[in-house]
Amino acid sequence: MISGPWVAPFPRGRRAAAPGENAHLRQWGFRMEVKLLNIGFGNTVLANRVVAIVSPASAPMKRLKEDARQTNKLIDATMGRRTRSIIITDSDHVILSGVQAETIAQRLVSDPSTREPSASAKAVKE
Image (tube, rainbow, N blue to C red; front, side, top):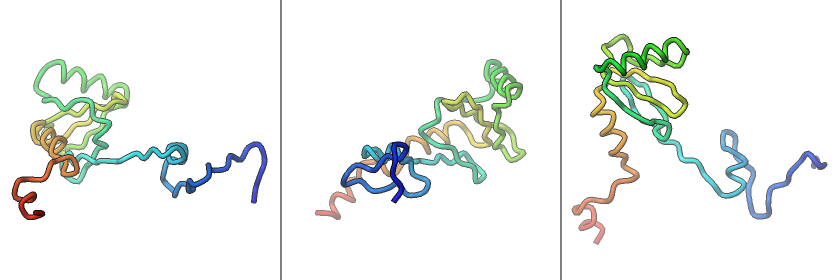
């Protein structure tokens, strides 16, 4: 076993993080849950990174798109189709999507893991 001042052992009762896990968060019992948001045509975005979903019709949104293009923070996920929504992330990236903003917002809100069971599902359980 390697030992020395540069090797920090895991606290008693904790396991080593699997490849791909955040070891420093896992060590203290935190677990990051990754939820993907489908933005159309096989493209997904991390749902917890989305700040805003807006319509591209207004002049400020067109300026925002151009500014993002100049700073290399524009991601075009329209697959050659017309831009129907703009997604803004917490890292100031601007993502263009070919799906309506309302549809993406519904997908974001209607996450099945956060919904309460319906009345019929409750009746089946009882």
